[in-house]
Length: 164
Length: 417
Image 1 (cartoon, each protein chain N blue to C red):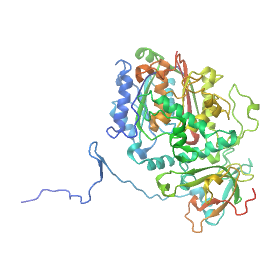
Image 2: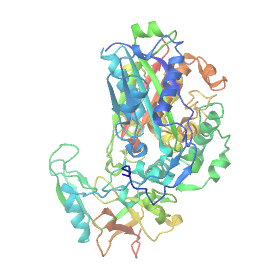
Image 3: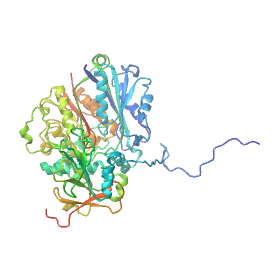
């Protein structure tokens, strides 16, 4: 007797959270081929232990987080190397985080200001207790030895001889 | 531009999770609520089109969810468009709906918003929201919104001496207001001690300083003068529209001068570098636009009630200043003096705000619009079942919708004709 066509049964079960309303776990994952495009020099810089900002030759405005065009005149900016020392402009200690960073809590985020630079740079501060962190405190950029080719390749610490 | 009116509003109860209803059914519920308020005079057949607001495709795990809403509520084959602008999505949707009537394109339009954030765990939800910050520079260091707003208020504390107790007072006010709002998610009679003792999420912001994730929907129906007269006994007129924007990365914000409101002077801010990360320039620009259009010269005197975007208790304080209810730096004192309480000079967030109502992103701005509409209709007792939150003699009010770190802000003025 000919058998009716049928789909094969699925061996692996489905995780059910609730029967009514029926709630199941579904998974979604994606790998991007993410290009930093025009910002590539910044990430190359991190791997070489350099923090690159950009400046507008026309407006004389300096961006600590690089932008390849000036936000005032729209003209092209030029890359320049930021000082490795700056000061804390603002900060927080995170005790909760986005899922990807939950395993790293508590961690400290800082906005760093550099002398003579008009905008700020967001990064991590490492090795300073919450009670010791103050706005205006000197911080120094450190770079990971093994590049991850992300903005996480730079972080900040308190300089050893802190002459505040 | 011709006059535009709000003729109906509808909301669902906001909840941490509403697994029994998908986004379409929640919107349908809010939509039917709005239509029922017009005693059956308006049917979907008389609605010319819609604007649909929802923030994140990640939460829905469904692209073109707006098309599914349009279909589900029975508005096909009429035109509709989706609006997205982070936390300000609802406010932008409301203003887009206004534009569709003001321009003469539609006579009646439905502004419909929703979010279903319970589809993922809270940490994942925070991650989805963090993807609405720069994913090359801000997110990869562990940046997320609680952290960004914490850094913004830390600078506010540094510049102006604002204290943790001061923004905790906003959380106390809004949660206590929400006790009388049956649609609110967190109806908690919190004390200052409760807020101050809740755990730190991102120092100095604590659990009760931060709004919660929600499932919910909200709808507003807007109409031309002719249509408003036909369908509604007490329409409320939209008299001011303003919007602003700011750099996506808050690190990029300038340190320049304050754009002044009519009642402010340059000498008020001699030494202030603005907006920096302590203030929301987009909020100031949005307020200036809306005040100019509505003829408001001194907001504290000229407004009777405000529903503003308090995703963080700290941002309510910062927003008092952007809106010019007090000068920059005086937000802390404004709450200390009780000016924004129900009994104060200018009640802010009588509904409970986002802190206590919840923040289903795409619905939030429309929920604010619906509750302000009811305030001006003096219909809060009708919809909330009690008169505790009805601001007496409310004639002119403001709604304020705000996206992450102040990247988009809308300010809209509503008036009782």
